[in-house]
Length: 228
Image (cartoon, rainbow, N blue to C red; front, side, top):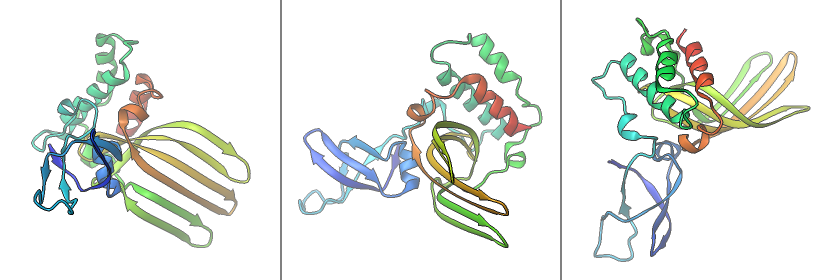
């Protein structure tokens, strides 16, 4: 169970509609808006005060099996979470359990040290990069409290004209060896020698955002690239 800072949006007989105050909490909750019931009031005697603490569970898929423990070896934790994620992607049983195990075992696990060999980066809500004589970079709002590396991209739609615009979902591997997802919109203008691009992203529920568009073999291929 976790404590989060949330903004109360609506109160009804069914419960309280809340919204995470910042991108980091929204990412942890898994969905920036959700309906919860009151567990504890900070000042139950004063009805004019709406300071309410809510105790909620993290909304990540099969969270009990999807947690990196601090005393775990990162290699073992990553392998465990890759297996769990593959099972979620293989919900329609396209591959047998034996085939899935064999596919996962083909990844270069031996002597692989994630914290040393993966280039993690901060994940920002907004980032702009313009390059001509000198680079001009703008970054705002780290989404997660840990850095990550982008594993897969599922494109929803795109446009190519004076600029290229792509919208879709990104799958990230975080430093704690768990996975997270973001929705993004990326715009790029190329006019050699100038290059300008901007990307906006926000966290989304990993099960709803990724599982319908990502296939097991594509995911493992992307993981192979990350680990090599």
